[in-house]
Image 1 (cartoon, rainbow, N blue to C red):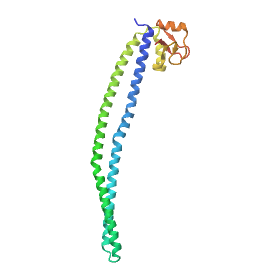
Image 2 (cartoon, one colour):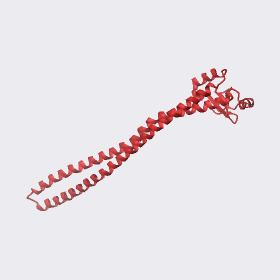
Image 3 (tube, rainbow, N blue to C red):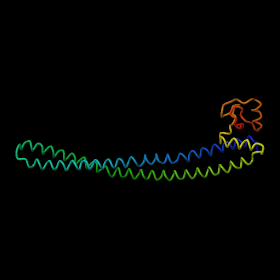
Image 4 (tube, one colour):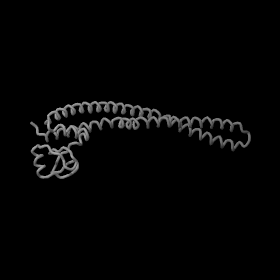
Length: 213
C-alpha cells in the first residue's frame, strides 16, 4: 500500500496539472482574439486604404479633365495655355498610371485576405480541439486525484482538506536535498529521515504538507 508521502506526492502533481490546464483554457480567448487581429484586421485595412487611394486618383482625374477643358477655351496666351495643357496631360497620365497600379494590387490584397481568413479558420479549429483536449485531460486528472485522495488514511484527511481548501495545490510541497521547495526552509535531519520513510509531516515555516521528492 502506498505511503502517505507517496499519495501526497501524486496529489500535488495532479493538482498542479489541473491548475495548469485551467490556465491554458482561460488564456485561449485572448490568444484567439490576438490571432484574429493579426490575420484579418490588417489585411482589411490595407484593402480599404487601397480603395480610398483609387477614389482619390479618380477624383483628381475628373478635376484635371475639367481644368483641361477650361484651357481649351482660352484664346489668349496660346503658348502658355499649351504648356499648361501639356503639364495637365502629363499629370493625367501619371494619375492614370497610379490608379491602374493601385487597382492591380487589389486582387493580390484580396488573395492575401482570403489566405488570412483560411489561416484563422485553421487556427480556430486547432484552438477548439486544444480546448477539448484540455477539458478531457482535466477530467482524467480529476478522476485520478479523487482516487488518490480516497486512499489517504482517515487521520490525515481533515488536515489535508483544510489545507487544500485554503491554498489548493499550494497546500503541499516536496522536500528536495533537505529543503522545502515552497519556502526554501531546511528541514531537520530527523524530519528528512521520517519523510524518506513516508511519514506525514508539515513544514515548520510555511505550514505546507511535506513529502519527499
